[in-house]
Length: 365
Image 1 (spheres, helix red, strand yellow):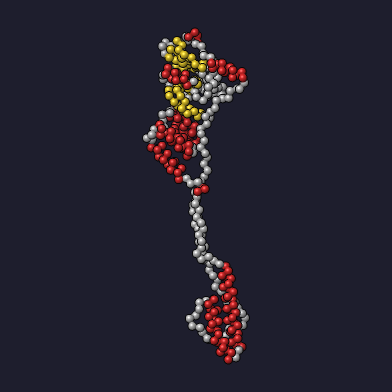
Image 2 (tube, rainbow, N blue to C red):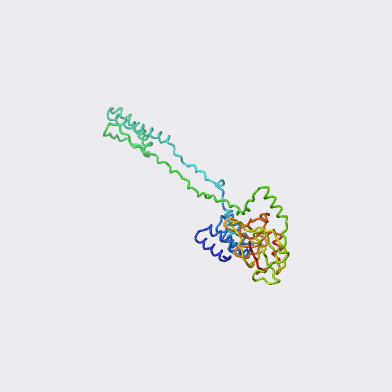
């Protein structure tokens, strides 16, 4: 698949909510077309806010005038600045009631009310029993007593009355006392405290570590010896044949998987040899005759389990297979890659100037 196909697949997966697949297709599209900012916009939609900011910044590095990346970056930064940590949330104190309800006052009021009621009943009983002389004395007292009772149960009368009212029953009946209505409690309206959903911390995209090399002394010694050894020109400095499509003066590249070497030719004349690292047995390098179809000074490379940014001197010859410089290992002479042909950065720089789009690459066992 080309870059446009990978980008299209990424957008379809994103619309379906399949962010993992969308991210994988977008990474491949970015590797195939480093000059396009569109894959980075898709990656920004797939990742968390911190990683999305980095992706949008990368998109703006490629195209500073992209309005989608500009608006997205501005929005993410504003959201990040408005986020309040839970420890800084201000809480409102519960307001103090202006008229607190005191139960003791209610109890005291009930006692006074009961006492006044009993006094009125007693006076009424005496009015029936006592003779008139005593009644005259009592009548001078009753208004004050009645007033005292009324003051504690109802509102005071303006003019105390001396009318004697015979109580129909001598049974002391407790008059209903007004129950103080408690002042309504002011319930503070809870303020909406934003709850911060813990977001996963954006982690750096893992870089695939090279396959572990056996730590035996024999292999270390063999590796050092092989790396120090310069490959000899094959066939005494001449190619035994020309691959299909190569003219007598055309440049072309040979890759020998069995010896982990590569050779540059002009026609049948040998020019230069290199020690390389090709694909492992899990990710073998393809064999056959191919042509370089695109060259990149720097390109990002990715796969299901790796992401390598800014790989130098990339020369793709078949789908995602290419010749390129290598900065993540120095184990040349041993299969190390996911299928590409790894050169030292210096050798890849020389080869980058030697070949052009259309140059033949011949790979064999």
